[in-house]
Image 1 (tube, rainbow, N blue to C red):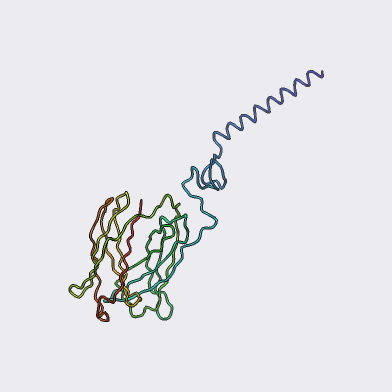
Image 2: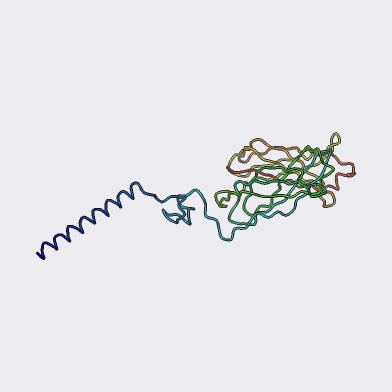
Length: 253
């Protein structure tokens, strides 16, 4: 009798083991598998749902927001120029893409227009955001601010700054315009489809306006000419008093 009861217990344990094995099999086959969206650190991830097999990168706890150094505007020949200088203080992360918007306010602090666009910034880079507008209500503009939104962070090693340099530059007058002529060289090992060339003009240290042009495609070690045109202002009697800042912008993809 005792042996029979023991036998029943053994059979019962075997039956339970089979049931649990079947449950485990069905769970592993059809249950919820680890993923990059399950809110858990698994499957070799560096953090929760980031790093390892996940496309999302793990951000540093010391990550700092992009800093807006200043925002300015000027009106030249009935065109509005908006210019902002921003800085990425992080030495190990760049931003592959972010949205930004300039908000334009009148003298009563009412929002009269918003300009939306997007850009990028490399690690520890200081760069400019610029917009040129034909604006119907120029005389009522009092102030402009800038908002930076939706940054897509990228590790520095995966989003390196291009090696582009200005070889020389000259400024001369032609048909009531200022012309900035020069050459740039691509010292990088990749081709760039578009290189934006921004020229900022300063008079006695004060920003008075900007202009830009685009070079379409420049290969490794290739040298190309550029020419940027800016209207000569009446209060500029001598172009030798002008300071010119040339900024090159290209995105590695």
